[in-house]
Image (cartoon, rainbow, N blue to C red; front, side):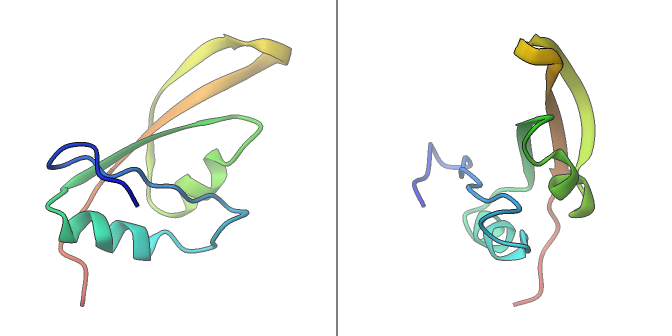
Length: 81
C-alpha cells in the first residue's frame, strides 16, 4: 500500500477484493489517519462501503449511462489490536 503524504492512505478494496474493510482501516489508523473519504460509481460498490459504516456525503451526477459518483466518509476510531 502506497502512502500519499503523512495522513493519506489509499483504501484499495471493494466487494470483489475483500469482504472486510477492517484490515485496511486498521492500517490507516496505524499510519495516523482519523478519517477515510472514498468515492464509488453507482455501478461499482457504494453498498459495500455503506455496509461498513461509510456515510454518503454527496453525489456527482452526469456520469455516462445514468450513473453517479457517490462520495462517502467514515471517521476512524482506535481499532482493537
